[in-house]
Length: 196
Image (cartoon, rainbow, N blue to C red):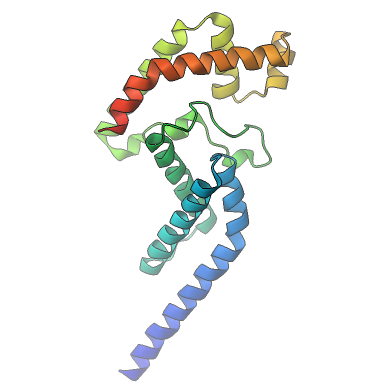
């Protein structure tokens, strides 16, 4: 009985050590990833703590093979949850595509319900995409182009200026007007989805 108890104690100590090492190794990079997407520092810290808490709970039940990938996926999920809950976060992303960690960038796809979550998520996703498409079609062509190139095609304003021949400030202004229209146009849908 004593040997079984000491093996369990040893395993628990080993798990705690692995968790501590993972937190130490991944904390800075994960926090940087979150802060690029969440402007409020307190929210970013809350998400980081939630991710590490969730990691600890999951790891204690069953070791996680690809820890880094798991952590970043959990962070993306928490960021998406925050975007869905908070009205103060702008419709437009709060981070820049083409940053140093392109493999970790978030797209509008990341904000849509995951089809793997079942029929209700698939239905909600179809409604959101249809409403967004309809709202985009209402925009003047120049505003629609600026929004699509920057948000959906992940082009920087500098790249857009080279492609279109327009000034960066003009493109920024066009995108801003597009975002304002889309926020207003999609507000009812957003409220309906949040209150489900």
